Length: 133
Image (cartoon, rainbow, N blue to C red):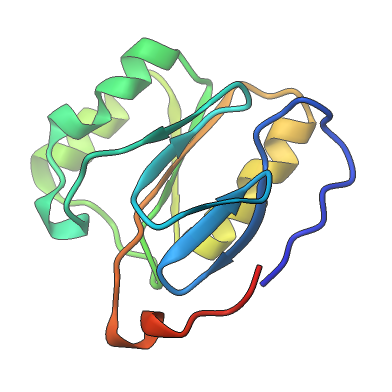
C-alpha cells in the first residue's frame, strides 16, 4: 500500500509498506528497522519470538516519548521480562501490527512528537510477490 507524504519536510516518514518490506521516504527496507523523524537504522533482530530486552536499547539512546512496536502482519504482545523492560523504559509503548504502526508513526511525527517506530519485517511465503509502494 502506498502512503502519501503531505507534511513533514525533512522528516523520515513511511511512504509505503507491504508483505516483507516498508519504504521510508521512498527507500525500500526488507529488514527490521528503527525509524525516528531524524534517521532510519536497520534493527538487527531475528523476529518477534527472538526479541530480548537488549533489543530495545535504542529507547534509552533516542529518548523518545512514544515507541511504536510494529509486530509484523499481526498484532502480538510481548510477555514476561520483555513486557516489563518495555514498561520500565520511561517511554509510552504502543504495540500494533506493522501496517498500523507505520500509519500511526507518520501522524505523530508530523505533529512533531518525539516518536520512534520499531518495525519487524518477517518474510513469509506470501511476501515473495508483495505489493508495490
